[in-house]
Amino acid sequence: MMKKMTLAACALVVAGSAFALEPDKAIQFRQAGYSFMSWNMNTIKNNVEGTYNQAQVIAAANSIAAIANSGMGALYVPGSEKDVGNVKTTVKPEFFSKPQDAAKVAQAFNREANELAKVAATGNAAAVKAQFGKVGAACKACHDDFRIKRN
Amino acid sequence: MMKKMTLAACALVVAGSAFALEPDKAIQFRQAGYSFMSWNMNTIKNNVEGTYNQAQVIAAANSIAAIANSGMGALYVPGSEKDVGNVKTTVKPEFFSKPQDAAKVAQAFNREANELAKVAATGNAAAVKAQFGKVGAACKACHDDFRIKRN
Image (cartoon, rainbow over all chains, first blue to last red; front, top):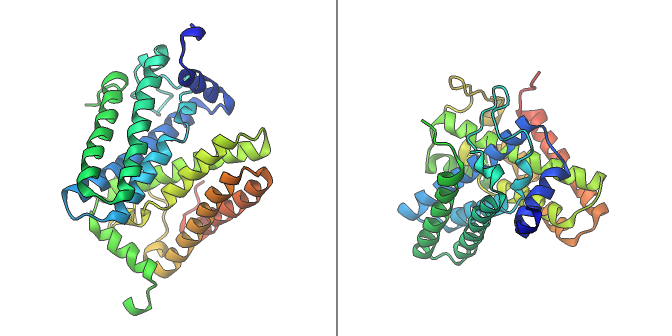
């Protein structure tokens, strides 16, 4: 099993054990990261669909990329695969049982997020719009496979 | 009044009106930002007090700086100065009634957070520890003035 794991999947496991958080705290911190990224995605959406403010787009894209690069794998500690009291999670069991697949979508998301930060720096609104779509698709790919649909 | 406002305070007001969010959403997004920064602060604390992992510290410091730079002033929309239904806020009224003072502590925090990202890149654990202390003090300065104490 370990032999078959990618380096990234191993890193996920190692990071997860480095400074283990209580499962409920881990769930809340990872949700905070995703929530803050979604606000920044919304900011970029408003810019590419409305008046384009380069500084705002750069700041939002940098924020998404930095959060993506922050090692959120460490927030999937044992015990955080299910609700902890009032702290609910929508992660699917597959995120934990298929670490290679989880690492793959996480890496794909990080690549697209880092590319968006690069593209944002050039200030070309059309290019940002195109790359923004790729980041959104990477978000969706993970949600489809690893997030329980909310009603 | 407007004449006396600093440029940053004006920017805060302008940003707040750009893509106005529902007050409850604005409260949740800003809390997500602060929460995610606190996780990264904790990561850096663990590193400077324990085994120092440069890559982890760089990633955490970059995340804090990027969130600090993301224009969170836009999340203090009218109506978000008080609880909205079940969405509670601990912001003090002074954050809204003294925008110059709020801008001052926000700018001070951003300066220290950006400096931490710079220092982290050098990889000197002692320097990171010192600058980490300054960021923590900047967090506290804002909490002291603008956050209601939680029990």
